[in-house]
Image (cartoon, rainbow, N blue to C red; front, side):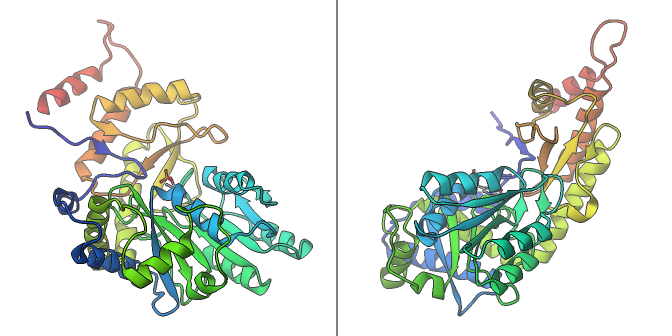
Length: 384
Ligand SMILES: *Cc1c(COP(=O)(O)O)cnc(C)c1O
């Protein structure tokens, strides 16, 4: 049987490059010198891609992106701190939830999820509340694909002597970030977004000053970024078993990212995004203004047809017949659904998406009662 990989148009996990996937065929000893070298390479590449050499360190954490975010919050926000969380989507909300679970007295500002975060609100809040210690925000809010203003946020926080903790999960690798130009304190990303690796490891990148600042008061072993960092520095090893195969693949993926370059990767995703807009154009429209759109994923609305989760379930099931996989959940506040533009996307998938949309949305039935588009589906199925 020839198995065809699903055509993933999801904002992570995503379609892997064959060479990246092939790295997972090797078994390695997690404490062997050869694996330590791979870990060191991964950490170095991340620091280099952020233009952060000399002042920062990348600390890998076992687990998906949320583990990295929670580790950063647990390690760098103390119980007496007062962080401000900017929320314009699900991942901002998650940061607030993580802080609340830890019993931290966080302040939050909620803004519309279909616009870039309004700086004036952040400035006013920092002005009014001098007790704020940290500014936490999401760079690219994957909920809608909106890009939030990284540089102005960090500059504003710096002027107020406030530390920055940035969820850059879906921006690192496709949107340029330079620690030299935008000196953030802590930034988190993960293996399975624009790095184009498999899921399973996250990265907390922190300034050396932040890592060195005090002995950890984290009430967790696995989420303790400082302790993990010290261990890497002293022994080159992970404290507990790492996902070796994932880290190996991630090293390969980062090497490919370094060759392609962040700018070119961003351009590649943007051209996928624009091709998706053209292919689906007759039936669905982008939620965001062009200036707020990231290249990494696209939120679409089709308000007459896709109004509820059940409607999206029907579209999803229809697309699966074409081997196409989009994100499953409808974002209720905006009634939008998401298509990922990251990973090894074949242009043919986007043409197929256009055909599948046409089939779904031209919901007219011919005299025989069968859906006219079905014929295309059947032809396609024979082809696989
Ligand atoms: C993917 C993502 C996360 C983390 O999600 P996981 O499912 O835990 O990997 C966090 N923030 C943003 C902005 C993301 O895109």
